[in-house]
Amino acid sequence: MAVSLSKGGNVSLSKEAPGLSSVTVGLGWDVRQTDGAAFDLDASAFVVGSNDKVLSDAHFIFYNNKASPDGSVVYGGDNRTGDGAGDDETIKVDFGRLGADVKKVVVAVTIHEGQERRQNFGSVSNAYARVLNDADGKELARYDLSEDGSTNTSLIFVELYRGPQGDIKVKAIGEGWASGLSGLAGSLGVNLG
Figure 1 (cartoon, rainbow, N blue to C red):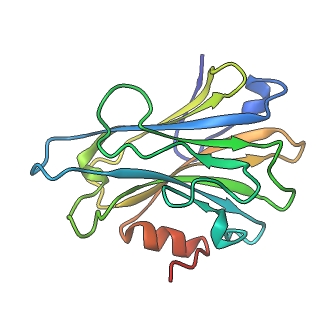
Figure 2 (cartoon, rainbow, N blue to C red):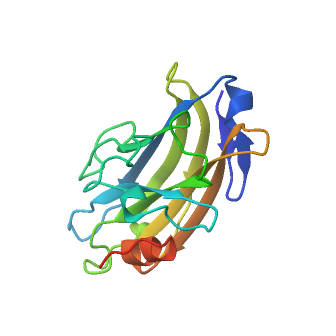
């Protein structure tokens, strides 16, 4: 049975799955009835160092940069509609390949052109992030996001990091930006110029 996280909560994934080294974060959502304009939500990941900024612009992983330079973080592909059951997009994190200079991997979801299309997470329902053990596909932790009435167009769902004893942990964040991907990426040190 997966651990259910609430905002701000964290859990040791290593305790749930001893020997854990690689996980996949599955992200899913449904769009509530809207004016008919399609919503395109995109997952992204930021590989962050001790200064809480990306190690380099190449450590911002998304649909136009599908893997970190060392291959430790990989974007699983773009689902443009959110239709269908199961995970809409995935981010894979291989802790065995992550450098020692990595403090955490931040996993976020952004509504593509959300500001321009006047779309936000207030129109998204059943949004979640779940962490799967790559070794056996078992769900270890899940965070169901509630953003009723939200005006955010970009949200950090979870952070993955190593604890003091080297155990792999996940923390539910649920922090949003009304300024979309540029605001989120800029706050994490990505040069979008």
